[in-house]
Length: 153
Ligand code: HEC
Ligand code: HEC
Image (cartoon, rainbow, N blue to C red; front, top):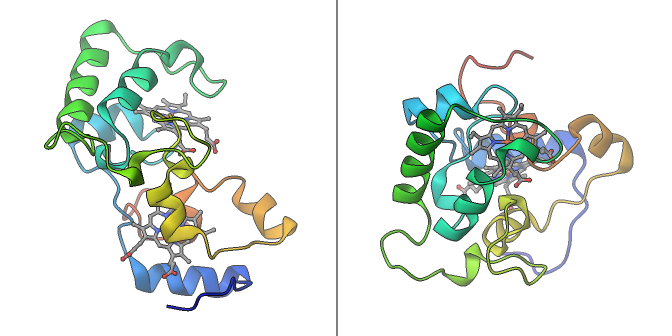
């Protein structure tokens, strides 16, 4: 492991990422894919804690500025899947990786967690590349196979 920060142009970020993980830990559960993969790919439940998912699923009316409301029955079904697969579901305790680098014990952005930052902390993108990607939550921009067939080039 290199200790210093490296400046990765987008092309090598893409290359590294495609070598690092083809699927980038996206959810494959049919309920999550159906209800949570229309605006972005469905994030794997294991990236966040139960507390975090409760917050996300309790505020779908204002979901990062979007209205992502679901009929209550569907919402509850999605929440159940997320809680069952949450990063702390088995242990009941949140590992430090699930906490936010900003100090929030239950962040609603997985991109803010120590776990995510640990895997992506070395990536430094220029303004133009970042503008193209829009957000680190846009996994598929750098992990093209994050969900096969869903996005085209
Ligand atoms: C109507 C569109 C829409 C739907 C449907 C939707 N989302 Fe989102 N989601 C967004 C937007 C917009 C963002 C913010 C993206 C960004 O900052 O790049 C977001 C971000 C997120 C994030 C934070 C990503 C990060 O780490 O920055 C999580 C977690 C999330 N959504 C979970 C869900 C779940 C769970 C569902 C299904 C119940 C869902 N989303 C359905 C639009 C949607
Ligand atoms: C700006 C490009 C970029 C974006 C956006 C991005 N990644 Fe990555 N990701 C990378 C790179 C590059 C690596 C390899 C880092 C390394 O090896 O040092 C990586 C590594 C990973 C790994 C580790 C793979 C392994 O085998 O250890 C996972 C998991 C991952 N990313 C998931 C995600 C998820 C989930 C998202 C969206 C929430 C995402 N990434 C968004 C570029 C990106």
